[in-house]
Image 1 (cartoon, protein in one colour):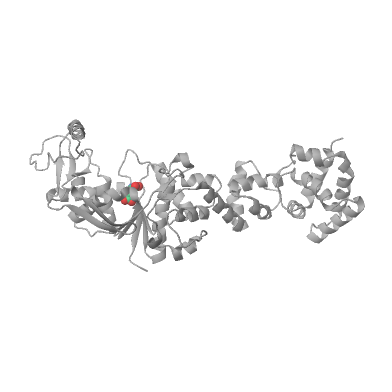
Image 2 (spheres, protein in one colour; image 1 turned 90 degrees about the vertical axis):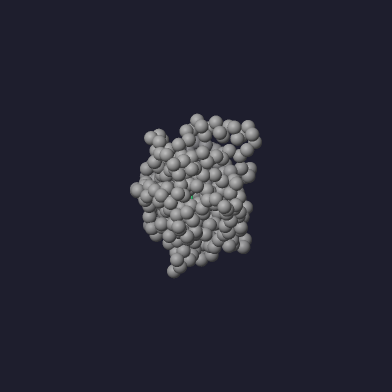
Length: 466
Ligand code: GLU
């Protein structure tokens, strides 16, 4: 156990993004590795953009990835009273002030600054104002005077220094009375005892402002670790152009959560040249020390490769369970058909996703085999009638499709027909599978079982070219 307290703080304005999922995963792993606490906080202060649907989507995606939290989910919308009280505190202490400047006035000043080649910043018009007109206002945090810079040591990026001349008096409460991100994030992180903030480096510019707020509110400052962005293969910020960016889109495409977890962690973290990490491996090995400073590049092919690895090596029973919705999507009913686990075992080698696996499973459960045209032309010819009749006869005589029995049947059929193994197996395979890629002929016979196999040979006999 340690006193480490980390958090993931998504804004519910859309699905869980690949980048957000990686941030969540890093935090989760840090807490697990060190026996600390992982806290989930939904940052829904932006009431207009936050939706329950997004909250659900984020929670579902985290559950699917296996990123359970120790505390939460907490909702900022439940905490407005506290934020209000903190605004009052800063106002009372003279560390914040009401600003009545209208949007039009601010726009005009911004425009002027631009024209004069100055960086647009709030000019402090209302800083020392003492009246309180009956007009809409925002609350601004006074940039502390007498200090030129704020420096912090980032656990990933090293020492970072911001000049205060870059900053201005930050709005902490909007005209509608709602608090803003930089303000509430500080209060929540402090009140929740977060001592290490791990997040995307798009927040690095917010950090000096937040540090000043920690100080003003009398809180101790946590450590920060800003993780580099994820880029597309063209080195531009990851977006839909580079492939799906929603975690759950990968579930829908038949990816396994362990493949995505393994993939996400490697986007920014390495451990020698190892590529394959189970969650247990990660909990043992993950540390911020091996998080790189440069951006990770999203490579869908690698994710695909990892997924096929996890499908190949996965537990067939679990894969069978995960496969079921994909079968249902294709209208495949497994009742009365071959054992699904046996089918899965045959498909693991040749499927990179659960969708591919569902496609591969199709022929096992078809009522009627649908033949590949070419295969039918080549193998379901009238010349093969005798072969199918003999196969039908011999296979009917087997009480069980053990490997020994099937081998004996084949030996007999080959002797009677004077055909080589391939000349027997290939037509039979087409009769059984329609020509779809499949495992060895004995395996197909065993998985389909006697009744279905004989039904398919009868179908083949009925459809032989005359
Ligand atoms: N709600 C913020 C976001 O989703 C959280 C930023 C932070 O981790 O401080 O970007």
